[in-house]
Image (cartoon, rainbow, N blue to C red):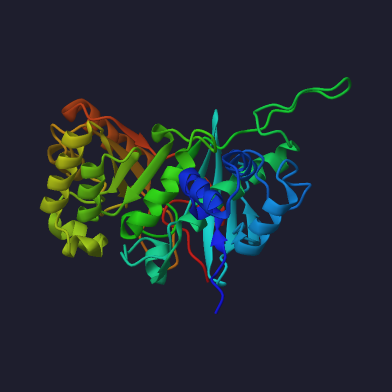
Length: 368
């Protein structure tokens, strides 16, 4: 049985260099191909897409590798015009959702790390659908490449920089660059640790998409071994921890993973992470009216995080078919923020909502 083609999006630049060396090709072709993959965003091995690669190199690539572009089964735009959600088809026919979000001064891609999720958070649509499989590093990277291509298509540009060079009668066209990745889509990133870290290394390569550590945020429901491994390896990315409750019983009711990794274990891991890396953690708190949005809850959060380098991201609950809670009102969210700031000197933000009308918000991603 012939070997499956190698997914080029799974390879770091060094791994690609070693592959070319094994084939007897010059290292200069590695640099050229890497540029075609992540700067030109090529989607084929044709002479038109990769003009500076010799025909024998392109033929070898076509025979033994693949560009695992993810076909779009459905693209949906939000009414506000800032968000587009893509239902993408994986090579085996499974599907995932990826979101392009525009904010002032930046464009963010929310990417998935699994088909479904095994964590089962009660208010999360992905958790409600269950777990199917991990994504490969290439399937994670391909989502970022897809969003980058979409930005270029919308801008009408072909140059890999932020602007095209204007011709005699052609004004400069600004091409928005993908600057931020949040691993907050479908799946638990730390449940798929090795593939996620490989993808982050590829996304951060300075000769490719060149996303800085401060531009990548990984969100976990609290997989303690993964947090400790992140700390030990000093991985370069932001860490967000889904907290949602400040007592063990309340958290376990919302986040079943808390039954495996208790709140005490989670907070100990978070302290280790911050002490080892020197990084603050973003603690996420889904605000559910009448359940975890009172002044008492705000003070419990403040006490729990006292002394830690932390910021709290407050996220009014987004509706899902499988959970009947109600999002916190604006005045209650502001009261929560005020208590954190004035009584605990703890910074917080209320998540800017994007794409709620197309089920593209936090906790809403799923497939039928």
